[in-house]
Length: 302
Image (cartoon, rainbow, N blue to C red; front, side, top):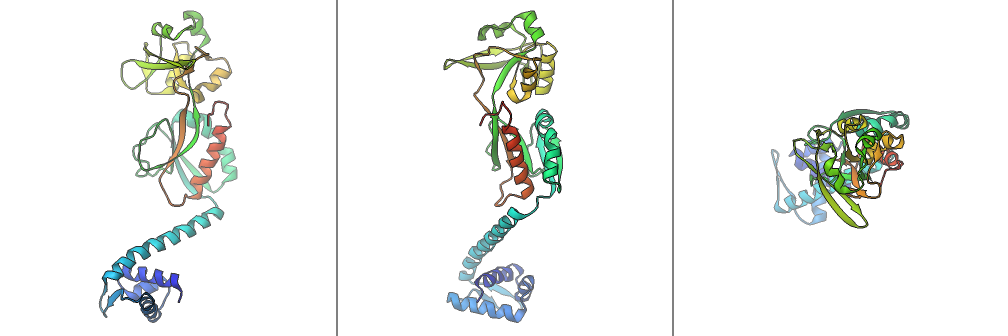
């Protein structure tokens, strides 16, 4: 007897509540299905189903066997799908959500290469900093920074990025570069926040940490806006290195207190997606591709 076929047939018959319909799902004629079920019961040494011409009813043993059998059938299907995915061509619409600044600098410039590698994938890119319901809104992947809530989702660490406090050369020429952390109390610090108030910026030197409350004439919940203001000479910002690295490299911004560590040593960058027994190829190849591209940057910590 084909044990897998008998197992699948039993599950199918119970789910359809019919020997004929359950057999039809597997292209097994009713007469053959009845014989397979009988032989399955004989092999197990117990009755699984009470069968009449009009109905089916699970026995106590049948109920126990059905729950286990259904789990086994599901696991077999998932294992087969996982193997097919290894050789399958990644395709379909891939919906990704990411912060706008990061997408502009580190996703969009690589899309020509990604498309050449995976021409059957179409990308939908939604630019926002937070998504409360990744699965409910239909996103496949979210790029997120920092500590993540315990949401039941899967998070793949792509890399990390340190924070850096910096200002334009013009601002530093006019107001002077801070020589110690306490000098920031008298500088125009552009704070990342959603409501009025002040921020605490932390610095570490020689293993000693120091925190200072900073504030200024502007705050914003958008990092790009704060950086644009700093580039114009408006004040000092503390932002992730990935967002200001180009401006630092070309001299538009200058790091202050360069001998200090600014904030935590590293802020993680994650790709977040729904938990699945086997990952669809389109998600797997995108996450691997982005991991390689992000880690190639000088600011990446991993």
